[in-house]
Image (cartoon, rainbow, N blue to C red; front, side, top):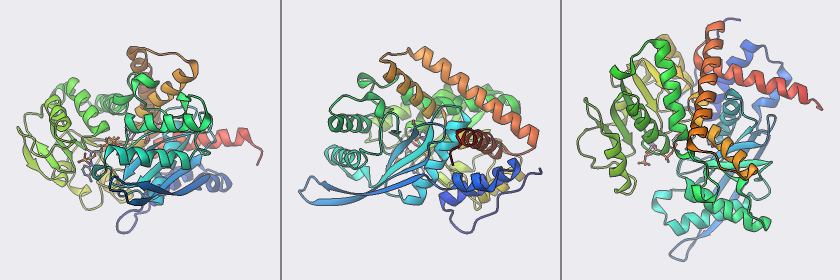
Length: 424
Ligand SMILES: NC(=O)C1=CN([C@@H]2O[C@H](COP(=O)(O)OP(=O)(O)OC[C@H]3O[C@@H](n4cnc5c(N)ncnc54)[C@H](OP(=O)(O)O)[C@@H]3O)[C@@H](O)[C@H]2O)C=CC1
Ligand SMILES: O=C(O)CCC(=O)C(=O)O
């Protein structure tokens, strides 16, 4: 069947519709039965909770929290928790579905879920964030579980928040339950390699794509948008592989140096500057928008959704885009990028290193055993390379972009499993 361009969407893209437009195209090419299409397009469960939290000044503020389980066909659902002002149900629904496809692409036995709370952690004290995370866990206690639904970090959360979640859940259960959450601190059942895992997967798939495109990493330039967990680790590891990282960014703006940013210095600066790159010296300050259109070989969007859209896509000059973030490219931009011949390693493949090592963390927790960093990295690198090669093969065979090929791999696996499970 010929490749069908995703239908362009109007105005600013709703992330769930952006996910659906690619899902539709891949389903059509696969000839997916309508009944199964309907099952997979609807999230299995959507939970919305109100979370009253006592703030430091004694007032009570009510936050809205979400957990969407998109699918449990492949196994217990898995996916991070986002603390961000922009969190809303449609975003969480899209992120949950992306988790289903992502776990299927890297062939790990999980379904997809995502959670989030609309809040601004930058303006909250550690105590307020802790009370919010404990309230969220309490409200989701019947949703979460090591064989049911296993959360992890996402934007605005990290090991500290996962520790509070694990502790609160364990108090409710009356027993220490490490395997209920991944991305925990190392001392409480976290896995070696999880912190850097998503950025590492971005690096591994970027190297694989550069090989296909015959780009020499020692001569290649790169720009990375977002300097949190994913962006800073991707930048550091790409730099270690010989690339010149010419620009990095966060919400404060982008920082450009033609000769290359010193990534370790930027990380150190951010860590000593309340998490922000604001004021970082040794680089020219440009806008996040300018970063996206720099004439680099590799562009890594590792911040948030919809940053590459129909407005700026015609000006993108990179030869390769490797998506560290979930949903950074709108479906309208897909068409423009494809016409320009830019290769895109899509989010559901490129950033799957995180959930892969989360899976290893869960396995180690259940075994009561700890793997070495070397074992974690070797196994996750192999999974990421195999997944890249599989998606690349499908994209060549069906003459479709890598994004559609990744959806095809995922939908094929989930739909076949659904049919084998039967009972409907
Ligand atoms: N953590 C993980 O393991 C995984 C994360 N992802 C995805 O990767 C992306 C980043 O997540 P993660 O690194 O964990 O999040 P973090 O919260 O650690 O970092 C986010 C970074 O993006 C910056 N940022 C946010 N919005 C914008 C914007 N509009 N323009 C430019 N920069 C922006 C932030 O800046 P500032 O610090 O100034 O706020 C920060 O540097 C998300 O899409 C997430 O879903 C995907 C797979 C796994
Ligand atoms: O590590 C995980 O389980 C999930 C990470 C995540 O939320 C993501 O891949 O988007």
